[in-house]
Every structure is written in structure tokens, then in C-alpha cells.
Length: 256
Image (cartoon, rainbow, N blue to C red; front, side, top):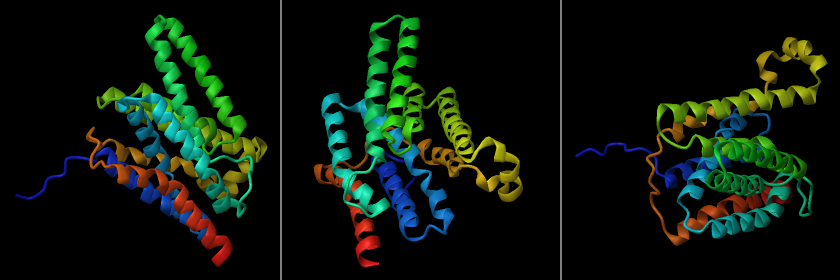
């Protein structure tokens, strides 16, 4: 009997995101002239962000989950700086795992407030918590910064498979990647230069984040299952992030 596709498990989604991330980072380090590699890479973060929320929803020990993620953030700092800047030292720009650490704490706090506070109190508390988390990510200059926190929070608020949940997920990615990301990009280039930017670049000057919502093509095929799971593969998936950056950094700055 021919095998029928039953959707992607969490394990499969993570592998897809890892491959996309490797394409993105390889393009950034060795082929910056091939922008299409970076455009493909924009799909990685939304998938990982989705999996952070799934991990939070299924974990039996939140503190242990947060500790693992925090340890990964610390371990990844030096490889991250080596890959991007060729230095083994500390620089202000922080790796994306710190964004996920802040996001994980954020959705836990929002979740707690929704359980113990009345509706309007939980709403006010959630807005305050989100504002603090957003500004913390901005201040620490983590990869994807505050917009990354909003992405994870959006997945948490619209977790589910109904059409309303999926519309919420789509709205989140469109808001973050086509709205807020481009506003930030335009602000950095100067609003007074907007006519000139359009004349010279057309739509190509817009933030490459506009490709990120395409990640939903994979996310919406998620079947809700963990998929293949073992201790060695779990460790390998965690260590892939720092190790692949370490290899790319060494190749870029010490070999080639």
C-alpha cells in the first residue's frame, strides 16, 4: 500500500527549519550577493517560534525547559559572534535563542495572569508584560528583537488549527513581517527618503522579512505529533545551532 502523507511532526518541522537556517547562514557568510538564499532563510524563524510554543504547551517541566533553552543561549554566544563578526569576544548583538528565552518567560507570565486574574485584569497584565518583554529584547539587541517576541506571543494566543486560529497566525506574521518590520526598516533609512527609495529600488528595498509568512505553508501541515524522539536526537537538535555556526565561522575566518 502506498504511503500517504499525514503531515509534519514536530521533529520533521524542526529538521526543515534547521535546513532552512543552514541555507540562510551559509548565504550570509559565504554568498551575501545571492539574496535569494537569505529570502529562503526568512522561513526558519517563524517555524522555530511556532515550535517554542508547542514545546511550552507540551512540556511537563517549564523550569527545566527554560533552563535548557537558557543554557543553549549561553553556549551559542561565541559561535554566533564568530560566524557574524569573526570575533571570539562579546558584542552587544545577541543570538536568537535569547529572544526565545524572553519569549518563553513572556508566554508563561501571560498564561499565569490569565489563570489567576479576571478577564480585563489579565488583558491589562498581558499588555504590560508584552511591553516589558518587547523593550527588553530591543535593549539587549537580541536577534529579531521585540518583533520576535511578538511572533511567539501571537502563536501562543492563536494556538490551534481552526480557521480563526490560522487567520490569527497569518495576521501575526503579516503584522510583524510586512507591517512592523518594514516600518522599522523605513525608519532606519529615513522617511524623507521614501520617494527616492521607491524610485531607485522599487519594492526591493522593503525588508526581506516579507517572505517570512510563507513559513505557514509548513506550519499548517503540522499534525500535532512529536514524531521521532530519542535522547541523542534531542541533544543533536539543540547543539546543531551552535555547532553549525562554529563550523561556518571557522571556515570563513580561518580557512577561506
